[in-house]
Image (cartoon, rainbow, N blue to C red; front, side):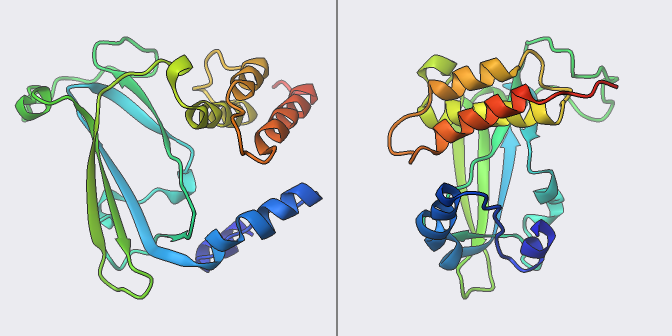
Length: 220
């Protein structure tokens, strides 16, 4: 179903109860029916003076080559009315020692000095390309993001809930990057980010995590 949806610029959904049917066929129907932008691409450039390393969490099947960003012939995703997309990056700041980075030899023809990068408070620059529904030539949007650290407790409900979903996904895949994540921590993080107006979906997510935690896990 996912391959068919990707090839046809469509969407797919798994409906297993009445609440999910209402969510897909009523609440979110407009975002799949009315396209407001097509061939939408997102490219992120991190500031090497502030980000030692980074990784995109998920979206493995949506990755494009960097050369494809400016290629209007390369097909990409559609955005519907009221549709939002969330991409999470894990960032290791400069000066922080981690267990995932590998040591490489010093480059001969490149310098480690970044005068432009070091003289700005920007953590990254986000570039978005999109075409209007009937257009053939893409338009470019550029937005810098400042390095303004916020503790998890002071972040928004949406951010904390997204983080809990990402951690849940890494647990299900037994990701090498899950570190100290566990089902109890996922539930606790999601419980504190229920917020208002979520139509009960976030509480349903907590129930789903509890069911997954109770499943027997094969070791091997």
